[in-house]
View 1 (cartoon, chains in turn purple, green):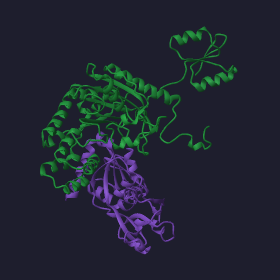
View 2 (spheres, one colour; view 1 turned 30 degrees about the vertical axis):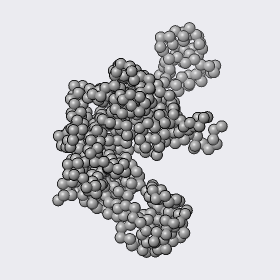
View 3 (cartoon, rainbow over the protein chains, first blue to last red; view 1 turned 135 degrees about the vertical axis):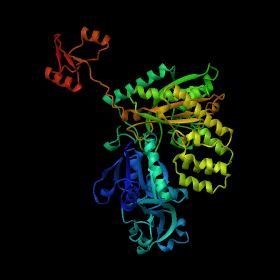
View 4 (cartoon, rainbow over the protein chains, first blue to last red; view 1 turned 90 degrees about the vertical axis):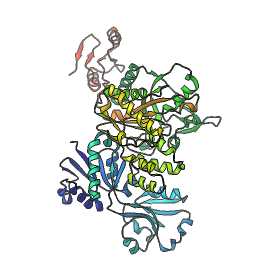
Length: 209
Length: 387
C-alpha cells in the first residue's frame, strides 16, 4: 500500500487530530508528548507543522494531505482540495475593536488601521467592502494593539470571546467560522488515488458513527 | 544603469539560466520538439506580444487580470502572451481556416503572467505544447493525451498519472438551471476544490429539483475508475459528455495508456475557453501538474469560422525540477591555439575551445579542469589527457 505523508497543524488542533487518527487505527501515541516533528506510524508518516505552515506543506506536495484550520487555509490561499470538514476546532474569525466602534461606526472611518495575524483574509474582507484599511501584520498578542494605540481594529480568531473582553474589545463583525478541515495535494490525489480515497472513506465512516 | 541595491536586480518571478541549467532546459525542449515532430506536428511561432484585445478573447477574468499590459505609441493596449493557445487560435481563425484539416501545431516558448507567488508558479515560464485543430472526435482527444504521456516518457519520466474530466458534463448540468454568474462561479469554486460541505450548503440554498441537486452534489466525489458508472445523466448533453469520456478511455486502451488515467468529473479548471475533455498530468516527486490540457471548440470562432481543437502544454521548468538528467556543457578539448586540427574536430562535431588569453601552461591546465575538458591540445601538437 502506498504510504501517505500527512501534515498536522500543531497547537489547539493537534490533540483532537491525533485522537481522530488513533480512532482510524494509526498508532500516533508517540506524537502526543514527543518533540519529534516527523513520525512514522504504520502506512503513514506525519509532519507536525506550525498551523500557518501546514497548508503550504500540502500545496507543495511535501505532504500528501493535511489536517489544518480553515482560518490558516484561507489565509495562505493555497491551491489544494478540501474534501472534508472535520467538525472540531471550531472558532470564528472576527473584526473587533473598542465599544465606541459599535453601530457600524468603524465603516465610516477613513484610514483605518487593522492589526492582524491574517493579512490576506483581512485585505480581502476590507477590499470587498470598499473600505481602505492599513493592515499591520503582527505575530502575537493582537488584542493588545487597540489598547496601546497601534491600531483601531483587529482581525483575529475568537473562541469564547474572553480574551476580547479582558482587553476591553467587542466583536464588530464575523468574517467566517473556522474548524478543522482535511486538505489534499492535487498531485497526490491523482498519484496516490487509492490511499487518499481510503483515508477519506475511513474518516467519513468514523464521523457517521 | 543597473540599480544600486544588489537584492533587487531582478523582478520577482523571473530567473537567469546559464551553464548546465541552460543546457538542461534546451535538452528538454529538444526532446519535446523531436517527439511532437514524430507525431506529425509542425512548429508555430506566434509573436511575443500583440493586441490585448485578441489575447483577452475568452481568456477568462483571471488570466486577463494576470496579463502584462502596456501601450504602443498610438495608445493601443498591447499584452505579452499569457499562453499559446489563444495566439494559435487567432492565427488559425484568421489565416489557416481553409486549409486541409486537421492541423497539427507544436510550440515552445516563454509566457508571462503577473501572478501571486504560489507553489511552482513563476511570472515568466516556458510552455511546450501542441494543438490538434479541426477534429472534434474521441480519437483526437486520445491522441492529445497519448502524445503528452509519450512526451513525458521521452524525457525519462515514467512514473506519471493523469486525471481526465469533461467540463461539458458540468456545463450540461448547469445549462438547465439558469443561475446567475456569481452563483455559478461559487458552485464552480466549491467543485474545483472538492469542497463538498460548501457545495451542499450552496445547493440547499438554491431550491433545485432533486435530479440536478444530487448530480451536482456528488460531483466532488466523482473520481476513480467507477466515476462514469456513478455519474447521473440528467439530460442528453450530460449523457453525451459521459459517452465521450468512455470513448476516449477506449482509444487510450489501444495505446496501452488507459491504466495511467484517473477519471475525475470535478476536474473543471479556471480557464473559461474549455468546452470538452480536460486533463492534467502529474509525476511522482512533484506536488503540482506538469501537463495541463483540454478541448476548446469555441475559441477559434472568436477570430474566424468555428473550428474545434484540443491541446496541452507541458511546463518546462516543472519538468526540470524533477528530471535529474545531466546536460554537459564541458568541451571535448581545449586547444592552446587555433589550427587545422581544431577546424577538423569541430567539423566532425566535437566541441573544441581555443584559448584566447595566451595563458601560461599551468593556468590553461587549471582552466581546462574547471571547464571539465577531457584533453588539452598544445601548440606543439602534443595531446594531454586530463583525469
